[in-house]
Image (cartoon, rainbow over all chains, first blue to last red; front, top):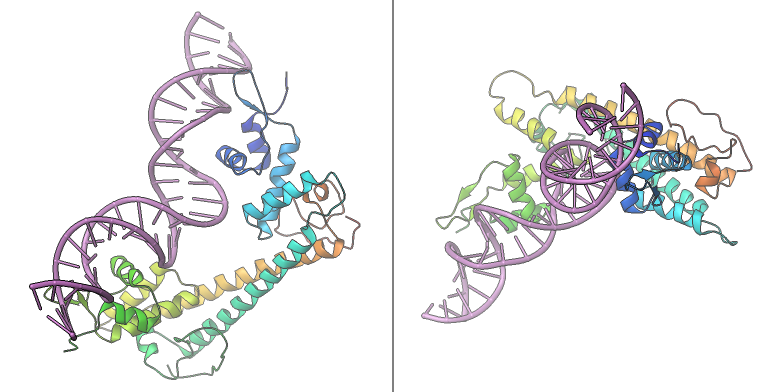
Length: 148
Length: 148
DNA sequence: GGTAAGCCTGTACCTGGGTACCGGTCGCAA
DNA sequence: TTGCGACCGGTACCCAGGTACAGGCTTACC
């Protein structure tokens, strides 16, 4: 007995849906497990760890494709070369920082709109003193308390 | 002549695709314009402003559905009551701040992983000192320089 | 051996914000 | 009047990351 974990057990242990496991298998994130004589999947307990790894990487902002590549790099590394996790994590860090910067700009604009008492977007669009930048949200940042 | 702008002119002036205008019309964000005898759309120049308003609101993090509601509230407000823009902008501000908080947590973890020299996710998952929280990314924050 | 829960494959659907393609019509100028 | 570009409606497709359903098989337990 217990020649492996059933898909439902793995899914529950990792806190994901059964369909998600099959989906990850199709995407190549999970290796194809053993099968019972009747065709049911039989997982080793490591599969739960792999699922947790995937979920952790996702939470860090990696896409499934990126996670797949990282896992594959880890598996294929019989020899010397590094997996590239360092570089990819650094790149992701830069992405995250850029996103934080964008959101901070957005927060500034939203706060200014609330402060200015903006109440109707179409009216604001014709009010020159409105802090909402209708022509783009890139560089400029002039904002002050207005009677929008 | 010039009994209105053609869809291509409006699209170009607002910097969006023609299909996008028709899509917004279907979604109820743009009012249905006049038509030429042959059925071609003829827009007033205000349509360009509305498009810019939509794009500005999108950049602030509002979904198309939310933008549609805000525009509708503005149009329907013949009488007194406010559009709710104030409340919705405040709520959106809170959302944006929460998202910034999440990203800052992620940034912290990523930076720790880079600093610790993590090189293989599956190895990390079995290394107790690894800073990547494989069990969730919510509250705890223990991280120190490790030889991952 | 019966039966219920669990699993199988394959396919379709979901969200959100568009984009692309198709065959057919309109508008306008030469 | 003919030619060509712009436009029409309708439908299908794209991205990511799953989720749901249908119809049939396996496994486990009594």
